[in-house]
Length: 226
Ligand code: SF4
Image (cartoon, rainbow, N blue to C red; front, top):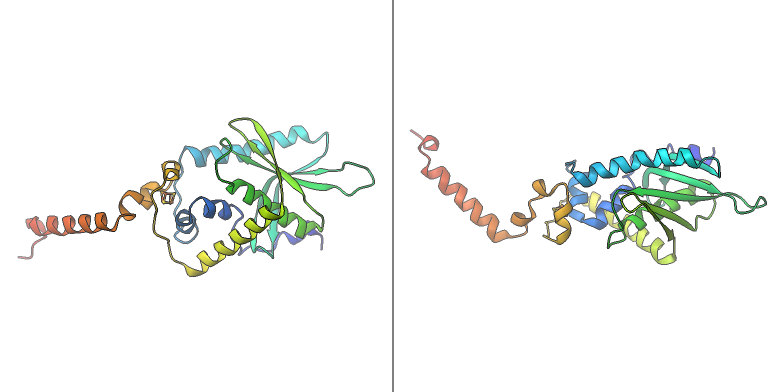
């Protein structure tokens, strides 16, 4: 069985993108993975368009080196599966084996946090496991700024990726949705209208709203018993 055939395994593993969601916000990750909540906004739609674009770009790149789009990935060590937008197979020297170089397409500019780097590093760990080769680096292509940023898979980034995978599995095994924390990143979150961090991050506000609801029901004659 070749490494690429092995990637058909792991159907019950969570997706690599869940690491990105986890590092962005554990509540968002739990709502998506446990309660199956999904709402699109301009950022999520932009992300989908970026993934389509990855396929167009790789078609044009095929003459210089081998490129595989939409390669299915799996890691037994991380217990994750997913799909790589693009994997370029570079051969710096005819005597050397090809080195996979994963490229992940992202809609926006580089963010302040390194969720994208962790997701890309998890792809590299999958490729190493599947193909038995070292994957020292990859890149994020930021569609908005049209910039390709090289990411080295350092020991530190690999440890962070393994820790994130461990936290993800613990979160899913616990099956509980963490409480919200109202932060600047909530502004761009597509599920803010479901999460309601302005309300649920403040127990006093929840209590106040519940009291108001109870009073409203008591004063409504249509809800009183005859
Ligand atoms: S709105 Fe904020 S707290 Fe709620 S899921 Fe999104 S990022 Fe997390």
